Length: 237
Image (cartoon, rainbow, N blue to C red; front, side, top):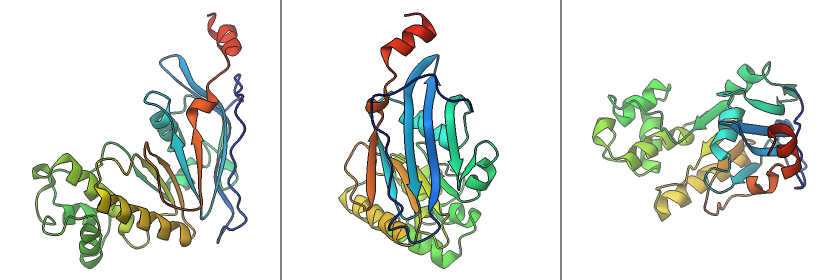
């Protein structure tokens, strides 16, 4: 993609790869800007997400958090700047990144006509592993109930159970994973993410609430609002 015509007064965010247990840099954005309905949401965003690290994206509703995630997973190409996976730029590197990606968004991606056990089996989980994952997210006893009979929160936990399966992909991109979880659920998920980082995985997540995992860096999209002068030049206001 071409470089962004916008700039940001915010400093770039970088996570140190110094303590990364394996293979260095994974996901990187350089001078990234995104639009929605003709409005620039953020501009000049830089970050580096090495192995063994986590990045929390913050911002008010409408700041562009979900748009950023859709851009990073390749659901939209309406952006300026560069996105790289293992040093290779999108769109060429997109399929390689997706082969190592586990993405959970607001739409849980759960097949409602299947049970939680059947949903995890569809993703290739063995029965024993699926039961352990469902137990970890508090769905013991609901494993054979059709998901269409479960609440929205329970379906969300069915989706999150994928994070507890053995052999989970290296890169997790999670849109508000702590939403609608009780205290025990939050603690369990944080423990799961900490284990993933210790094994050399990477996590990029959005969250309105504190996240108790380390190493964790934060970026607030409010710090990457485009300067007014560039908006005037581009849009004439």
